[in-house]
Length: 189
Image (cartoon, rainbow, N blue to C red; front, side):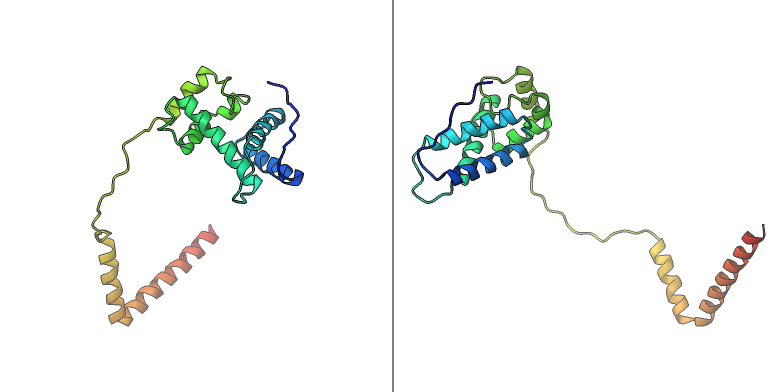
């Protein structure tokens, strides 16, 4: 790991640079860069790249510029790993890194262009292969759900109970007496 060099920006307020440092640190933590030394080195690289550029004229906050710089560094790193810069999206690279468990298995290789193990490259390329065909739009005609004979049977029974309240009362009393009889029998065993 290279030694940290002093970082003295020529533009921007120190408070803004500290805020940018914190924002980039949190962003890298989200990518599971656990090593404080490695994270500090990556933050310094990103902030140095921002400081080497002229100050923004459109009023873009320094924190935004710093996070965009880290995203650009990641895009360059993923393109280098995949060896297809025009076809690799940032999302595909992040997904490949997550699927190959790159942050855990090779913690000091993240955003390091000179230290990319061949095994990591192979695993990320394998993880980023598309598993199936592209999504195709299709039309599905809605159909009624077939529930079989049970709904028809219960529907007919309910209609009969509605029309003849005496049958309904007899069946309900029979069920109640049967339940009471079962409870009596079950408690006397």
